[in-house]
Length: 556
Image (cartoon, rainbow, N blue to C red):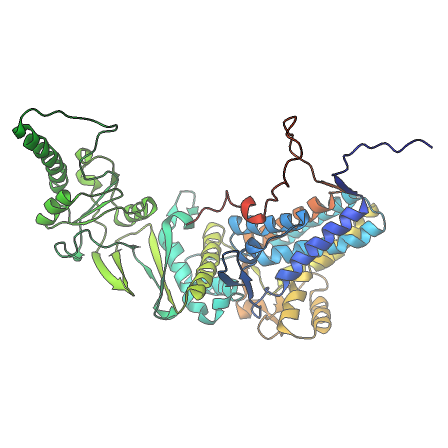
């Protein structure tokens, strides 16, 4: 016998073939099981402890997975799924994971029968195309202006969330906010930028019912000289600057040698005059409120307050942009470039209020604001964080509808219709791909099944009844009422989903399942190249999920 040849180093672990497929499928199913109970109106919450010992209580699929620290590579890619979903459409983060887990689960049987993964993937992709076609068929176009439909829609989206008990409240906030900042970009399209122009300010205290959408902006700042400056101005003229109103020091260390004593006074006087000229340039336009992103010296503050102008300094850039959008002002970089058109007159009221123990400046009652602030009040910080997450989802749904006003039925009805249609079509699929195609059709039933499980009804009976109703792809609107588990017509119950959320869910789930099925080899333990003579390097640092996502998630 020949001696065995060592190709890979000892330190490398290599798994290949079906072992990998099974491991991947198991890992993905584990992730799906964590999330599974958070689907639907009767969902459970998860409580997560993070490294710092803070707690997160949530049932938003993405928020849960973001906090989990996973070792298995396949499970990590499942987490990416829900993040993509969250960034793309903002809702459906839970269903995407459940669906992908189910797709892999049904594929397991075929892998045991030695089907080739590409065959399964091909069948899945075919199923995906047909599923999207079914969605197109049952989608309804709605009128975005019709408030009650919008309310029903956003409510069904957050019906699954913790705040469903305050359903109307959050839905109202979301619709108000998104309709405020919508910008028409022509061709009947509307662009809604949630991230940039809607700010959510969480102020602990008070009740949730006190939350509201402000027709304008609120910032966590007080005026510079509280005693001297006005704290309430009706119809203010606002000037926004992004330059400091103070004397600029030399770039590097400058030494000035003065021979005579009077020169020293001249120098000081020059500084004062410089600031005075800056202020007078601003005061020419008779503003009532000056807001700058940078510093504001005592002297400038004195000149401004003497003229009866309120000033706010060191405002965040993002906040400044929002104020500009809301009041119609233009942010100016140098005071000498000010023009009349840069002065914002769109705001109806500027006032500083004390909420809790902090001062907040409100610039509200704007004429046609293109930016707004949502003020959330609530009992505790954890509660507020959860409400904020739900509000994000609700606003995303409202944005999706404004962009693409098509609806599909919720409550698992869409998935059942897709499933029934695919089952019918599977008889016309030729060759070996027929079986995986049919399995994909069955996998879609995971969503209504999970809904039924979470309501605690008899799952098998409910599912059989539903399949009977949907048998030939008819009755597209019959689904599960997530609260009672009864089989009802979704049209009457007003349980809807946005079309592009559903489409995105299907696409992401199936593509991810295909990707994971295609993996047939995992080689772990690859070391970085070392400099010769460095010897054994210390244990490689294992990158946790927290670092991996560190770049993308910037603190807000």
